Image 1 (cartoon, helix red, strand yellow):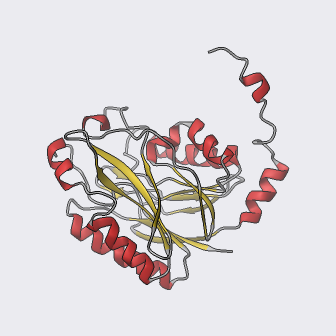
Image 2 (spheres, one colour):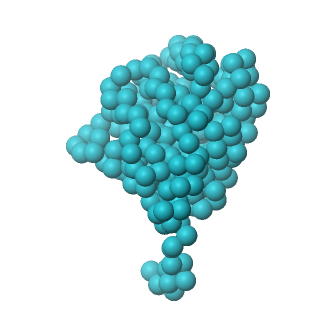
Length: 269
């Protein structure tokens, strides 16, 4: 069974400092035999509430910029796949994309996804600094299985996970920076378990810890069993996954197969 590494850490406001940590985590994950290393949302740097949209935009990069390029080199050096995130420059003035990327073991970026559901809820307004993406990225075949990518707040919208599952995803990876608050950890655990159960897939959700974030990076198997909960600890967690588990679960609990789209489509909203 392939091993995956999940990184939970507290990002500082210093981009270079965080990058050095990320490179170190990739090396450690590879040495432990992980096929893929997954990082949380906002790993590039922590954005304070007082940071202006203009300042954030000035620190953002393109996918061919130094941040992603350096991580890609490290992935190639250690022959490991990496999923991470970065603030991507957008054409709209003073706005950035919250973008995740998938790098293969040859150091090539094989997929990017721009977060489509911005966190405009519970007193936050990401749209004041960010531009929403406009499409869901197609699942990609990797050494551990077919991966579909989401980011954090996307988890609250079941349509997206379902669309990715119907497109063949066996593993959903959701880099997150889940904000602390009333019932927030309960929401986090419940939503991650539910998305895994209803789609018969693995859910891998590396999360930020510290600052305003709750930690609790989690991996859930297709039947809803929590395989990893990192609580408040910074560092790397490791999990072995099995695609046979996905196949068996979808066979005994055929939720995707038993959907009544003939009836759903006739219901007028």
